[in-house]
Length: 245
Ligand code: PGA
Image (cartoon, rainbow, N blue to C red):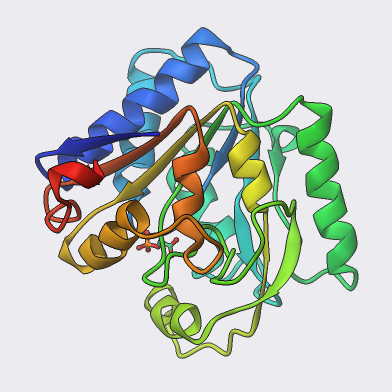
């Protein structure tokens, strides 16, 4: 794992967008797994803009969503699906057959997890995975305590995640469970970028880099990834000492 520190959110986003474009240019059939959330928003907007300007063809890539709030339909603006369609898939006109989401309103969530595991396995794994980090160190919805060797699964959301997530919804929304790819998907991905921005993430980034690698802080798992990058703006990196980078 390597750490990269950028001047600010704009520079972090530009570099994240560059990574997305580079993987698609070098492998037009790539499988990408993309997080939703405030952090990657600008990177996706920049990637979509530059792909259109430069005629970079995303039509043969496969996309797999990282997670979804159980019970929240895709038309809800707070859903992960709504976010990815708005900022990336719609602007790029990605063919529907190439997009894989968890169906959050399915009567069989375990089957949804199996479906995602199968899609990823059939493609031979994820080429580029972009994840954010929760205030509690979650990756996707892999909350503290979840094992590193799991593929997709249903989770009980942590109190921190349920509270922080209200920022995505117009109205106060009852959230209790989530569907998520597992940390094993991340550890098996060919390349992973964990991106974080702002002072509010500084403390969990310090723990991610400095504390023992363990399910207590799921984000520490990225330190086991040979091609994992922790990409930060200066504020998110502000509590790191030279030794932990
Ligand atoms: P954020 O979410 O990008 O909105 O901060 C990150 C996460 O919870 O994984």
